[in-house]
Length: 186
Length: 186
DNA sequence: CTCAGATTAGACAGATCTGTCTGGTACGGT
DNA sequence: ACCGTACCAGACAGATCTGTCTAATCTGAG
Image 1: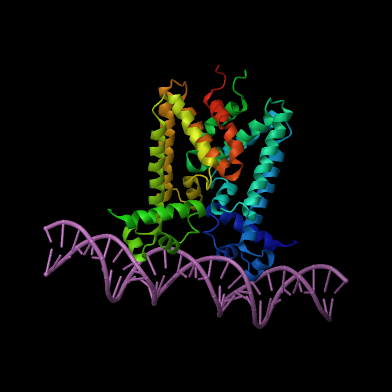
Image 2 (image 1 turned 45 degrees about the vertical axis):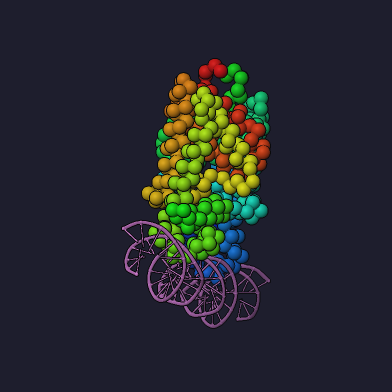
């Protein structure tokens, strides 16, 4: 075990930050949940904000791994699988929206490391969609990828704030509408 | 002047909450900005959370007024005008996303008054879209209104986190794609 | 074995937070 | 003239926050 204390802290922080928000969760609560001394916490993370940024970059790599696990089939199927996954996760228990969007709501400064981590995730997702659409021969991959990101954001927000079960039923329809350029035949 | 102190507090709170988030803005800062004594603050608002809820319900009525100002023409034109307005506001200076989504990120409990205020806004917006689509003779108003709400959320989030100027260019296209049911001719 | 680094519990400083309270001033209706 | 209400300035209590520090213990590599 290279550094189990650090990962215990990151695990606890992930759980608490996602469930309750960043500013409402104090360092004391994190170290209590992680079973770690305060000095150990500040040994691994210079400040609390460093931990928040680490939390987000960790979430980013996890999402990337999840997306990689969904790939393998034809590109269009991968796109649909990603949004099926969003709909499923959004209806699951403990869903609290998007960790990046939620964190960004608490960090107004676009230059802050937390916001930079958010931007990194978004660039990755947009690029992934663009590449998949291009591989699928979509006539307008860049534009459509942008709209797909908009759709993703709306879905994760809606799955948190509205009835996720209802949203789940029309996710596929929404994706297909977005994938179809106006004036183009199906 | 019925109660100028109260509105000064609400104005200051609106500005600060929206720009910096709810939990980061303290009561002391609000009353300083509003030029109001602390006792006056607690005379008008029982707790800080009451003020947060008041902030959101106020935002809701303002959005309703803004929407009413956009109406008047044919229903479909009103829908498009609403999204044009979203794109414009999102590209304006000081845009920080959706006050409701941002506040919800800081209030996990769905039963909390703040979250209830958020839900009220969302029900209104969804109903407005549904009615407009129905009046326009859209074949699937309820479903499409749900997707329009998803689109709205994605747009306001994207206008905050990404390049709002770029998003503005494709907002109209996104709306039109969403308005077009799959398998239907334009 | 030895020694450096990781970890522990917890006190501590200094700031900030919400909400209460005191005490006094200004004003408007009756 | 009187009284209730709004408003003011600011102290205060009690909790909580981040980050530092002490001092001791555990552990693993050389």
